[in-house]
Image (cartoon, rainbow, N blue to C red):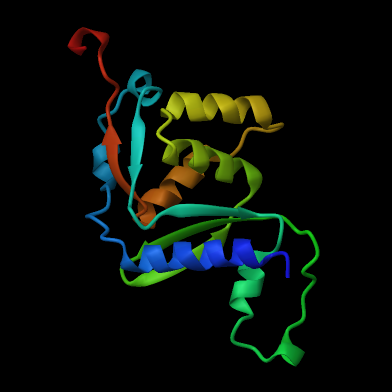
Length: 157
């Protein structure tokens, strides 16, 4: 069962998401006054329940099948990469499969990179223009975003 370490990591992230203390989500009105020039330097703060899991195995599929009897389980567990977003909305922990570009953008933003830095990497690795606006809308609607941190002015250092 070579997928077990990744499955355990997913289970742990789900447990952490359930027990995390999430704050009031970012309200859509908070982004209305941001100028296009300011977006590049923004850092996004996500709810404490938000995390990512990447696995060479279909760990989310395996985790979702865990309640079934072994003879009822029917999927291919061979190397099949999955990228999973774990988060909570109110008291419901949710796991969602992400495509590569959205996963990489979230990975960079969760690591503390600015929006400009994360989008730069996305532009370098993506063949087509990804639907970033749709992703942001969904993150706000789902309550995953907590804060926006304005760029630090060099004069304030």
